[in-house]
Image (cartoon, rainbow, N blue to C red; front, side, top):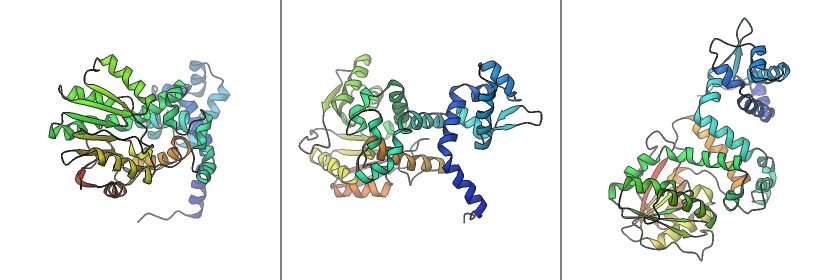
Length: 352
């Protein structure tokens, strides 16, 4: 049983939330100005004056940022006044998951999330307006500022790329010859499939803007003879997924939609499937994680969907996704929890 906080402890935790955005920006500044990396290279410590001199910053600027870093738990002072990184500071400085998450929050979410109340009231991603007047982020993705776009793709790919080698082994156990990659994004999965199996063909299904990016990547790899492109807006019920696939693959795709939309999309997949087709859904389900940090990050990601992405989707639990698939006429054939060293579970489904 977790120990209940005392009143003073609870008040301290509340202040962490109250001033959280300020401390977040202090950490961003410590990283981007090179202060954390510099301290990290001096394991025996470095003085404030030396930091200021080596980075051509004012002593005042370094001092206020390091005081914030001290309160946030990222740095500590030694008895002689030198500063060193704490364990959390090391993670903030060099851990890839943390780097990707900080950049995503700062570049993609930070301004827009202030519209959260309006998003809840209106059921729309009101925070997206800081970038442009689109209904969803996916429509505007090619037009986002380069830094924002880079952070968006790094976030998206970080939570899928590590899973791909294990996912390929699972999908190709049945030796599929023709795979539909629904929500194919930049084409990374399609390219990985072609690298894994010399004969497989892949059809990418996505919005035209996304397919334009994927097509360029496919051209650069010389794989236009094996990867096809099928423009489709899956929120338009009149647009149907074509038939003929042995595998329909959806990776980190369905969490971009509301529950009702997921059922509609899966019903669309159902009409395209036959008894030999297998539907694979790969998602980082928030209730199926080994570490509290992963669940914490995934829960926060739901609010990105609320404020920036589309206003009505979220990260789902594994059981809720299975139930939605059942409503669409699929049944679970097999599950592969937390494949490899990733945060992902794969659901293998067949039509009822």
